[in-house]
Image (cartoon, rainbow, N blue to C red; front, side):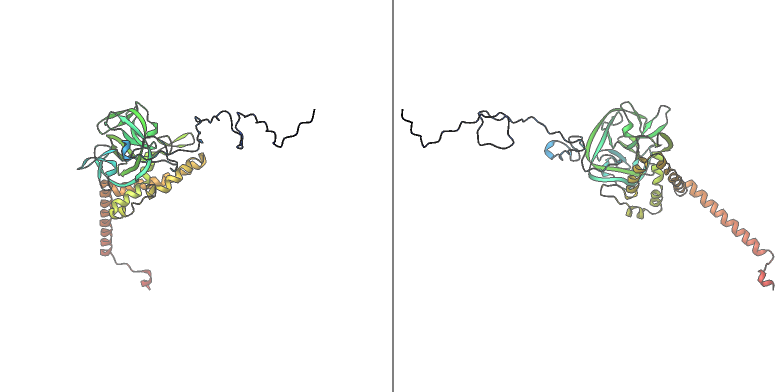
Amino acid sequence: EPTPKPTIEPTPKPTPKPSLRPSALPTNVPSTEPTIVPTDVTATPSSTTMIPTSVPSADDGLDGDELDEPTMSPTRKPGPSFCFSGASIVIVQNKGEVPMKDVQIGDHVLVQGGRYDVVYSFGHYHETLETDFLQISTNAHPQPLELTRDHMVIQLRGDGATIAVPASMLEVGSTLATTRGVATVQDIQRKIRHGAYAPFTASSTVVVNNIVASNYVAFQPSAYLMVGTYESGFSYQWMAHAFMAPRRVLCRLSWRICERTELYSERGISVWLEGPARMLPIFLNKGFVITLLLIPTLVVLLFFVVLEAVFLSKVMTAVICCVFAIGIMLLWGVDHRFQRGPKYKHFRDQK
């Protein structure tokens, strides 16, 4: 048989078998089955990454200073925070109940003992700072007390004595001091709000939502300064109040200078506290020996406490004035008797 004449048309190439595995590079050959793309994979954020929540709008049904989730801001600097929320209630003389955000320097607020003290300064004052608060519900007020975990409140111990402890040490069932007796902690939650306020009074306390609270914070989860594992005996309440003694003396001597020197950092911390608030945690984290170096500082603080007692106590002021007057009278009497006695000449006049 004759050989068949070859054709000019090329023989079609076999179609490659489609692969069900996705290739790293795209191919021109279509797949016979659709590619399955996983849609339920959730990205897991790093443990060091903190996702901020958005600021709620007016349509969210929340207050302007309240956030919907207790999520920490990634821009917040570490360190103790001493403040109340702006929604907290204080009692101002001749005004009644006033939100904390409306309290001003010069107002007389209710403090421990049922009396009123003037607000001479703010340790923390910031109207928009996002702050993480503990929301402590008690039977003393229908509205819960909101303060930072390091801020101290006055707690009643088993022996009936009172002690200032950080709010982080409270638990359900803890007993707190009020102006009329005792309140019991019923619930503790977290709440994120905008605004942070910490008024300072001469008594070192302020009544907030009928609970007696401290003006100050603790830099350790303890009522006392801890040197290693040992309790020093110096309470944070006493140390903080002693540290502010020069400021109180200045405000008593010149209220005008006191107002002019009321300055705050970008985070709303008083310039009188910004440096120590940063340095003290560093000392406390350096170990036993470095912490012991704080003891001389406590001696200096004791001097300021005595100085304040002399300047601010009416009784001490009266005693000092009496001693000074008696001293002047004695000196005048001695000088008068000396002038009436025999005349003495200088040894140079003897020649």
